[in-house]
Length: 286
Image (cartoon, rainbow, N blue to C red; front, side):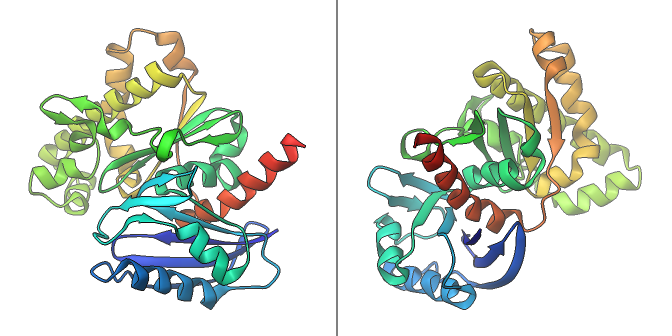
């Protein structure tokens, strides 16, 4: 099955043609985030045109914001101020005459892992993205659960200490301490005790975020992605210490698998997977 995946970020739009889990060709361009919503939609369409093939099954698009799956409107997008109730699916289906599926980017990460990555071995798991913030996508019975307005899985918005969970358990942890996560990781790799302690603290916060996921959903696995997950080996000990010493249901924790994504091109693969998810759901319902 051929399909197109599009990842819309605040700074970059990336589109790719996927065929049998392989990336055939890709194209990226800056997001005209300060332009009108029409200009942004046109830029997305032009990016799709660069990788388009007539025999695609559909187009999947991941956006960093809320999507109304009933009306198929993008309600708002992080870092694109002009976007408010944009009928993206309708506009792109009119242009390309192919089915278009739009969802939140963290949901796309989870569904991408479900079809292409480590999620293939689990029926029920949560994909957590640790980047600028903390996002999550929920897979139940091998299908994406989006919730109302694609709002399910917002574990980063849970109230925690004096702020929210993502203020402590994502890249914001470094930002609030006015340090570069990359620099701190390099220092920790060289054995710097203060840097190692910072990552240990980060791990403790991530451990509590995972505890919330366990309380809510009790999945078989949690798959971590995003830039911060690349430092898993630096924060794992702090994360596991919290889960082993604070989490009350140890049988639940002991059965949980915590994995780190190894999916290359995960953002566009994840977006394209929305097409696969829709097709497989259609087959199951017939």
